[in-house]
Each structure stands twice: as structure tokens, then as C-alpha cells.
Image (tube, rainbow over all chains, first blue to last red; front, side, top):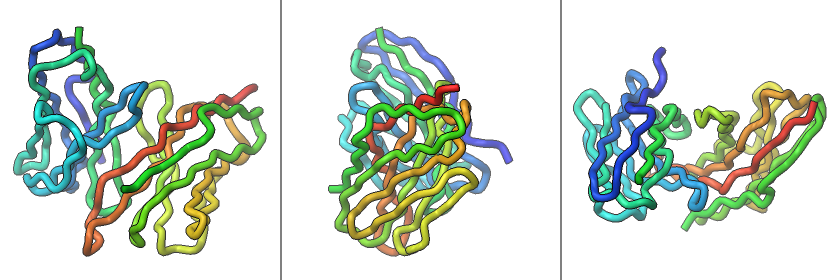
Length: 111
Length: 118
């Protein structure tokens, strides 16, 4: 069974631009959640989608948004990028509670 | 609010020896999962072991085992017969379940960097 895939793996943007990251969950998994990892703040929860509905949201500004499609694939968007948005963005998929599997992440660098 | 604390930023162990990583958590919920994730330099987050809060028996996965003390809200990871491939960041995490048992999000500790000496 294929694992969680994330595209692109690396991304370089400049301040003020916007970016879209994609996550394809494991087949059969309907929940997709996103996490931001930085050296200073560690791993922080962004949001979680289940069957195309956002069920839970972390404490991030409105510049961070996401969506989920009918095939469970998810995208997250960051508008008006700031230097502090530079991070590793991890996506996790799950079918049941207690079973979150992570993708390899997208490394975003904002210049 | 739920919190997860890892008090050891770095640990070191000799190959073939045993090491224990500490984790404490805080929650008022009764239904949750606890996890240890491993993140090697490749950055791929790998699930090492998980524990359901309602289970008294400590989880084990080959060389990895946990000491789950629910009353003390402690969840330590023991790695036996340490191998060079065990070198990585280890994150303790908690998943508090929504009402009805549906899954919630993960709350992570800051991590412990484990070095393994040959």
C-alpha cells in the first residue's frame, strides 16, 4: 500500500507570494491533517479535514487555509508569505483514531 | 489545554545499551492515545509505538517499550539493544479523542535528540 505523498518536496518563495501544498493520503484514509514544524516552535497543528469538512483548526492566522477533495486529497494554501512561514509542512492521514501516518513533508523557504 | 513535555533535549547511548526517554503530558480528558514518533535526518516522521489510555498494559514493539503511568501522566520510551539506526529526534505526542471516540489532532513535545555511539 502506497504511503502518504506530498508535493512538492521543496519550495522557495519570496515574501508576499502565496503557495499551495498538496497531500495525497493513504488509500482508504478519509482524515488528513497538517502540521508545521520549525526549530523554534516545534510541531504545531494547523488543521484537519475529514470527508471534505474542516473538523479542527489550530491557532494560525487566516493566511493559512486548506481544503479536501472528494478523493481525500488535501491542499493547504498560505497567502502573503512571511519569512516566519519558512518551515517543514507535514501532512498526516488516518482512517481511525490512533493511526496517523505522515508524509515526507514539504520544505518551504521564504526569502 | 493539552500539553506534552519532554525534559531531555538531548540524550546519548552506547550501541547495544539501553536508554529511556522521558515524557509527561497534561490533559483532563479520559480518552486519548499516546505515541512516540521517530524523525531521522530524512525528516520522515515514523510511528514507533502507541498506547491507548484505557489499557493498563504497557505497549511493546520489538526493542521498544513504554512505561505508561496514567496517574502520574508519564509516558517514557525504553529502547533496548540500541542500534546506530536508532539515532534520530524522538517526539512524544498525544491525541485526545473527540466526543464519541473520533480522532483528534496530535499535540507534540519539543523532542529529544538521541545519539548512538558505536
